[in-house]
Image (cartoon, rainbow, N blue to C red; front, side, top):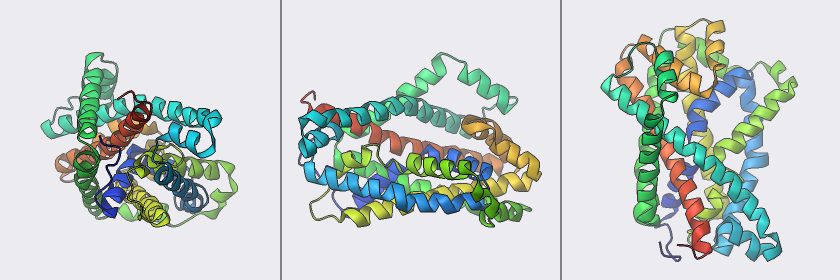
Length: 339
């Protein structure tokens, strides 16, 4: 990948940035965390922290990356001196550790998309997930496929690899989310879920946990401070607007989270009692996604169609973020002259 290669357009950069930000945290974490922390009340600190925490960091990353044209370690060394390169190294180690986990999650999404298409979830989803997650070769196999897809895209370069992939993945992802929302809100009883999601009980704001979870969700979902936006910014054109691009990506990421919430929360409340719906939302990321989602879609008219679409959306979200993580690590190696 040539050092001077840049994104072909502003929208190419924004789509890549959205691909970085919109990941599994939007689809499987946001609905669950929002439901566990007051529903609509959670949205208030979540939006506040977007502007107070995430966007300032995203703007800083864009500015640093565009200015230094180096990855996270090289940027710190160039900006404030070689003695402080360890700061970038700390970010690098942290993000790469998440990368190791994320490749596995992407493999899970790919596996379940294939299974949903072929109708291969036999028996209870709980038993199927337990058998799959305790298997040795299956998770490794799909993990390697996911890494291979990401590596193939990265080796094709910025324009023909990263940008072209996200020009497909992000429109497909948002289209699938919109379809899922339409199906969700038209279910009988979905209004209970919508009311829970958008009619705030302000007493939840008295809990410090609501604010902490909102900050965590915003930071995790946008990728602010992870160094990946900084990496993409090294391929920005010099005249691209830093603040506008960062704001567009941040608001787009929040929009994807809201769409995911509107797809999952009303469906859950439409099919279950309020108490059972909240219990489902408390079942954890894997429990909600790989155990309860298949059970819920089995109860939805046309669920055999919408279940594969959900897992396709999850795979698109995971892959687009995985691409950014692999490029993050690759850029560091390139700066060090290793590749």
